[in-house]
Amino acid sequence: MSTSSSTPQVVTRFAPSPTGYLHIGGGRTALFNWLFARANGGKFLLRIEDTDRERSTPEATAAILRGLTWLGLDWDGEVVSQWDRRARHAEIAHQMLARGTAYKCFSTQEEIAAFRTQAEASGASYAVFQSPWRGADPSSYPNAPYVIRMLAPRTGETLIEDQVQGRVVIKNETLDDMIVLRSDLSPTYMLAVVVDDHDMGVTHVIRGDDHLNNAARQQMVYTAMDWAVPVWAHIPLIHGPDGKKLSKRHGATGVEEYQAMGYPAAGMRNYLTRLGWAHGDMEIFATDQAVEFFDLKGIGKAPARLDFKKLENTCGHHLSMMENAALLHELDGYLVAAGVVALTSGQKDLLSRGLYCVKDRAKTFPDLIEKAHFMLISRPIVADEPAAKALDPVSRGILKSLTPQLQTVSWTKEEIEPILNQFVAQNGLSFGKLAGPIRAALAGRSTTPSVFDMMLVIGRDETIARLTEASA
Image: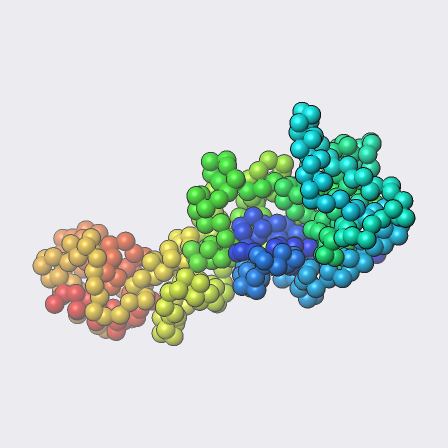
């Protein structure tokens, strides 16, 4: 779908805090924002919410950018730093003061603590702090530090029209006069988010449903400034296979960990898109298809469960669909992320020639490398234990008899296959009895692609050299 000239351009954003790696849940949130923006011809913006100066680090910011880049989520424009905009946030807080939608509060931490203690003693299960400075005459203001608080409504209800959660009603009596500017002139999260979203032109806020309660409080800021409220869409969190909130005990939780584990980015995008969103019964789709079909109506309300088996199957489909050049390029990235030695140019040449016989059966890059083992090794071939059993004296004799017959044959399957079939017939063998020693000789493994594919990929000279070596 696309936006018409009469409607504002769709603008979404992803706004992580740089206090650690990019969580897989954050990756999916970014993906949903990216898909919705691209589906509607809009913009996808990136803001780093780095106002927590003690916990925010450049290393975490770099990790977030790497994770997004690996997932293939390109953002529009420059990355925005929330910390760099703190003067603008303070400016809006003072504008609300001038509008009469916020006020100065001189209550001390001790006075606030005393209020809460008294509320608890009276048996109140929940008590919103009632500042004595709300509505106070400015002439009574002391010469002391103060914070700026919102003038929250005390009666009625606040409605959140959410595209995923539906109509959410918040009783205003539960909303406090939240602080928007601290006494040191630093803005609070609730203010900074709204100011940034407004200034960046964000039309749709798509984020985790753990922020749903924040929407009511942030809506107060929009109302106080007479700003248009964005479209809310709070998506359910990702749970582990046991239905509990995803954590380290379930396995990898960081996006970069999945790259290092060898999942292809396209498969990861497909799986994360399908994790909590549906388009009929469609399970496997290319990114351009996801962009074409994505809408907010397809997002479910229930938490999605991470299923590693389904993830592997999805990634397997994408490995088989990938063009060889793209697959080899991403394989290089995997090797770097996993700290594995890079492939030589010769190994890459063989892989490029032989991917056709291994990529359809691999689900991850480590799986692909194992299946392509015969292409990546060099003589002398060291057979693993199962393969070594196939190279007993009788089998070595069989290989010694076969090898001369391969010296002059045209190196195509159509020419090689009759030679092998004729050999087993003449020697009273089953084809499996011949294939086992050939697999062991060419790959050092008992489970491999077909012997014909291996012979064609590594070529006549290398095939004969390996067979000769194994039969010695």
